[in-house]
Image 1 (cartoon, rainbow, N blue to C red):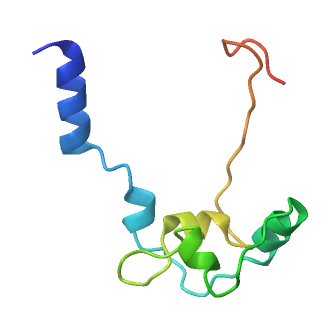
Image 2 (cartoon, rainbow, N blue to C red; image 1 turned 90 degrees about the horizontal axis):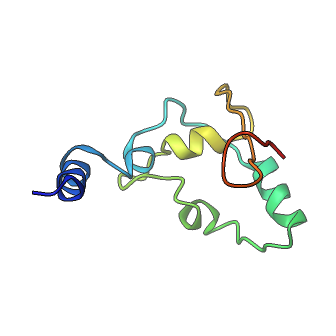
Amino acid sequence: MTPEQIKIRYEKKFIDNEYMLKKKSNSSDLSFRELKIYYSEKNYHLDDKSFETNLNLRNEAGEYNLLAELLFDKNNIPFIFVKFQGQNKASIS
C-alpha cells in the first residue's frame, strides 16, 4: 500500500469527522439569539422552526450536540480565530 492509501484507510477507520454532531451536549437548555442576530445582519433568513435542523445543532436522538454547545449564547468554551494572509502562517491579517 502507498502512504496515501494507508492514510485514507486510517482516516476511515479511526477518525470520526462527525464527532461534534453526534456527541451529546453537556447542557440541554441552549439559546441561539446572538447567532440568529448574526445571520440576520448578514441578510440570511433562517426560519425559527428549522433553524436547529438547518445548522445541525441536534444529534440523531434529538438532543443538542457539541456544535450547539459551542454556538449557543452563553457558552464557556474559549476559542480564537486567526486569519492568515498568503500561503504561510508568517502573515496574519
